[in-house]
Amino acid sequence: MTSNNKLLFIAMILLAMTLIPLGDTAGKLLMQQGVTPIFVAWSRFAIGALCLLPFSGLKLSELRHFFNWRLLIRAALFIASVSSILTAVKTESIANVFGAFFIGPILSYFIAAIFLKEPITLARSTLLFVGFGGALLVIKPGFGMSTGMIYAVMAGTFYGFFLVTNRWLAGTFRPRLILISTLVIGSFVLAPFGLKEVPELTINFSLLILLSSLSSAIGNLLIIEASRQLPASVIAPFVYIQLVAATIFGVVVFNTWPDHLSFIGLIILIAAGMSSFLIANREKKRSLQN
Image (cartoon, rainbow, N blue to C red; front, side, top):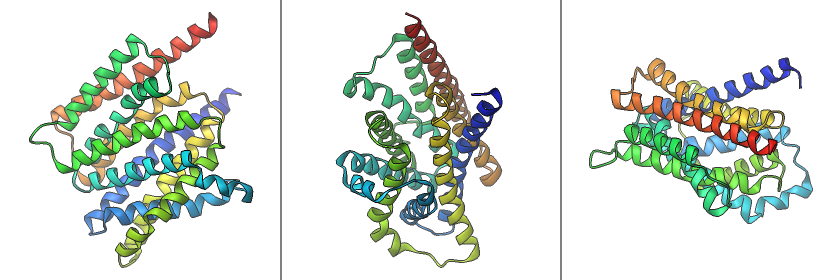
């Protein structure tokens, strides 16, 4: 791969990591105007499925996989994570929600070690515990912990298990088949609840619904396409760009600044997360040389 192509795919990753919190920002704007989180979640799955279906390469012979129990588990975890995070952003700042949400990658490291027997190291474990400490500064657990932050922690927990299912399914199904199956299953599961909550579709609402749905769908599609060309060790550190983007959107759109503890926690999360991935990459190179 030429350096120009590599830069193009890195640009795709940066765009994807910006689009995902943008989708939640649009969802928060909708909910501030009375739209329910369950409708925003359902519309995200349904519109995402319709838009990405032409690019999924889905064959009739693959439809049976939609009922595969492993893909159903993955879809259930993603539905729970999306529904929880949208409920959280209704009342909490985007930056704080994403800070709490990022306990997911931390949990996935230890869950994968238990269930998938992936190796763990002292250096990475230490850094992830430091990152967890940063998340606690954002979450502020205790009697003063808000309901919205509880939902954010739930979203991160579901997402942690979801990340493990991605590793579990790696090489078993096509990446785009996995994505489209999750979107289709989610749209059907949430339809009975989402269709009850359809708001009056003004131009403003329609544009925000499309922005919320398409930002998330295109962001995930870009990640999948870039993942086909770049190794995971290159992509992984960019995940934390979502925290930066979420903070910027919170300030620009809602004029919401993280408090001092939350801001320190976000910085710790980003630093610990990126350091962990750099160490993992170095350990992988060392093992290949041996």
